[in-house]
Image 1 (cartoon, helix red, strand yellow):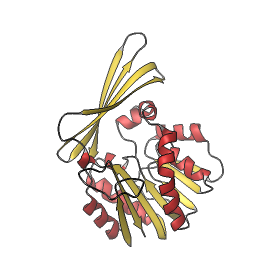
Image 2: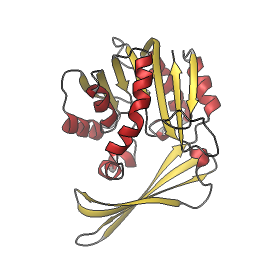
Image 3: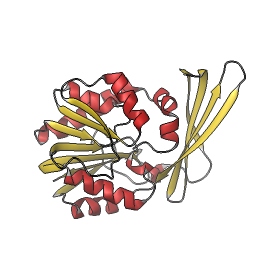
Length: 249
């Protein structure tokens, strides 16, 4: 799900992610859970620019990538094409999946669910994912664990020098939390010609494990598992960087 700044600053967010490193880190986790349910058809309900969907397709799976943002879907098509077995559609994750489709697995990763404007949208997104997966299938949700973020001033995490459509740029990223909301802070400084600095603050919902598990069971999950990362490490609310929920239907 790409809302607000994520839609407007697609190139910025692409530049600060090391996609080869990230996908290599996460791939064994998805392979394991997809193989466990014999997945052949997968939907990424908030696919962004399509990196996860393309990776799943490279494994021989039929994949649909969907996103609310036409800009993200356009970049996914431009970057990965639309070969047989890989399709893209503009659709929000709180909208019904095609009633004629029944997927073996659904994923919503990379903070997409935490970008929802409110908890009502989170509820509907979980309902639609579980409705779109067959019995015996699996739903995977990943977000940053906001409860491990500092409650107070911003902590600057990384800086990247890159080339944007506007020219050479320096991007600085930080995070912080204020009670039950977290924020991703971005500073973008163009380094050529007249120097310009843009700042963006992207809010994230604080998602609680107990509430998420309750919703998944309410909407059809037979079992749920919670991890603090992609190596199946236990989830620690105060320390885990990631929150990964796996729901078996």
